Length: 278
Image (cartoon, rainbow, N blue to C red; front, side, top):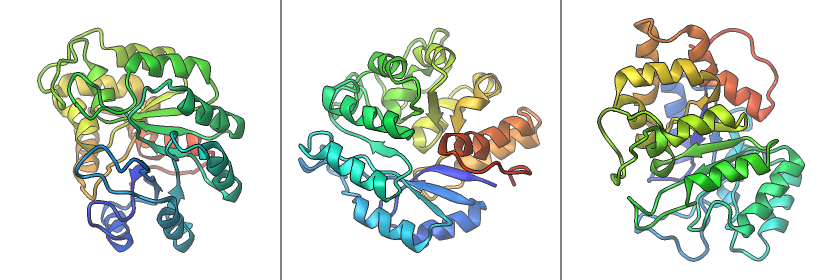
C-alpha cells in the first residue's frame, strides 16, 4: 500500500485521468488531493485556482482513490463557516494551506481551531521572505508556536520555506544545495512537537534529502515516523529515491512502510493495514 499525501486535480495542465495513470504507474493506493484558493487572484504568475468543487467532484467520482482536503482563503469573511460546511459533508483535512500571511495570523488560527474541534490535520505551504519575495505562511517560529498551541492537530509542513530549516545555515536560496549544517530548526521542532510532520513532496522535500545523502539516511532513520510520502507532480523520482535506499539496505522496511503509508494512515485515521509497501 502507498498513500501519496500531496496531490492536486486539474493542476499544471493534468486531468484526473493523468493522476489516475500516475497512481497506476507508481502503485499508489490513495492520494490526498488539495485545493489552492486565493480570492485576491493569487500572488504568482503561475497561480491556478484549484477549487473545492472540482476537488470534491473528483473525490465523488473516485472515493476509493482520493481523500479530499480544502483550505479556504482565511481572508474570506465566511471562511470559518465554509470550512465547517465542507467538514459536515465529509472533508478529511485542511490543505493546501497556502496564503500570504503569517502562519499565526488570527484568521488562520480561527481555522486551526475548527480543525482541532473536528480532529482534522492541516497541510501547509511555506515560503520564506528571505528567499521568495512572494512568501507564504511566514515564519518557521510561528509554526513552532502553533504546534504547541494546538497539540491535537497534526500539522504537515511542505515547500522551500519549511525544508530550508533542515540546516542550521538555511541561507537565502529557494532550493539550497550542499551539506546540511547542524542545528537546523526543523530538526529541533520535529523532536519537540509530536504533532509536526514533514511532507517529502516537490523539489523542496526531495532536494532536502538529496543535497546531503549521508545526512538524509540518518534523518530518515531518526524521523521515519514523522515523514510523509508525497509528490506534488506526476513524477516517480521520490518513490525511486526511497526504494533505492531500501534496496541498498540503507533504510529499513519498517521506515519505508512508515513513510509510504503508515504515518498517513494514522493521521487520516484509516483502518489498520496489514502487509508492507510495494
